[in-house]
Amino acid sequence: MDKAGAADTLTGGPRRGRARSRGERGGAPLPLLVPALIGLAFLLLPLVALLIRAPWRSMPDLLTSSEVWQALQLSLLCATAATAVSLVIGVPLAWLLARVEFPGRGLVRALVTLPLVLPPVVGGVALLMALGRNGVVGRWLDDWFGVTLPFTTAGVVVAEAFVAMPFLVISVEGTLRAADPRYEEAATTLGASRFTAFRRVTLPLIAPGIAAGAVLAWARALGEFGATITFAGNFPGRTQTMPLAVYLALQNDPEAAIALSLVLLAVSIAVLAGLRDRWMTAS
Image 1 (spheres, rainbow, N blue to C red):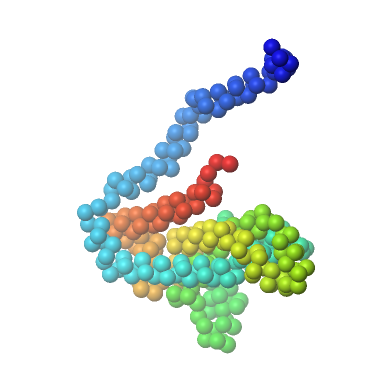
Image 2 (cartoon, helix red, strand yellow; image 1 turned 90 degrees about the vertical axis):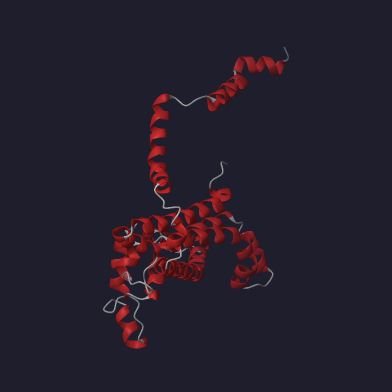
């Protein structure tokens, strides 16, 4: 036996490594396996039930009805507009949080992410208090510019952007923190302004993070319910998005509610499939 083999025998290094590998490949202990399977069933059973109860034969007619098509078009339009708003103001906000040191930055970051945990209905009430006709800012918008946001299509966009933008900000900020700031510093030393360095150097570097955040924000906006119904109402053709149409159809036409739910489910699966290489692969 050579010296390395004798050392391994004395220390038990490779033997422990082989034992650890066998433990990783071995079966899970029963006290962990049973609750894990119960948790998996708990998450998948409602989705499987939705697929089982889906009216597959009448699905084309349900999805091409005027009410459903109207809600689908409005949802796609508003979700896209909300994502555009989130990109315009969310990317600079993420850059500010990631690159600029200022007092209270941690508090600002916490406030930015607050809509993630805030009940959507509470967000809708807050939007009414701020942007309603008698709101803190809304009264001035109405008096000076004649702009009224509640119970309008623009109000849907505002509500969706409010709940969706934190997803974009978190994604972009994380990407900015992972990016090497020396590229920006090099650009500024060569005479570029901070904005030019951001536009020509930083944006191409963080483009994947922006794309991932935009997809998440779009999906979240598409599925928004609570803030939308509180701030914008549920008016067909004007503010009734797909989640609101599902809620209304569940009372009158359950098959249409299932069909709309399947569309939203398909969108969610597509988003997860598109982001799996970024966030769902093991490191």
